[in-house]
Image (cartoon, rainbow, N blue to C red; front, side, top):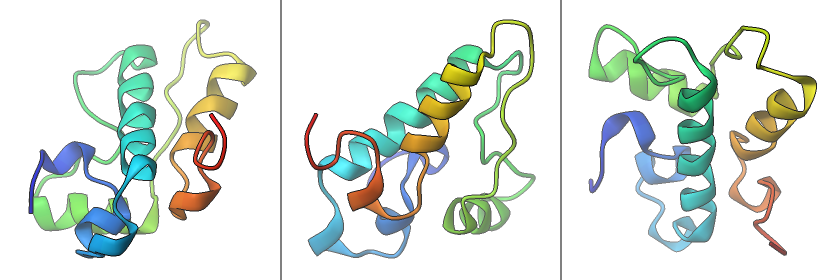
Length: 95
């Protein structure tokens, strides 16, 4: 595995080399945008153990950050990037 566990995409976790590409970068962008709008120092899939983090990534199990600056557009952007299927992520087919 290459990369930081908190930013790895579901396909990266599964070791699906043929599926790892620009979609994985879009996933990581979604994680970073989530962090920008979050009031915590965590990532959306952070858990007590690495195994729990990986399970949350595979299930795409996260909560939206909260606060007055988290608009519906921000939530939509995050949700469209943190989508389990790489080809369905915003920008995957045509940036």
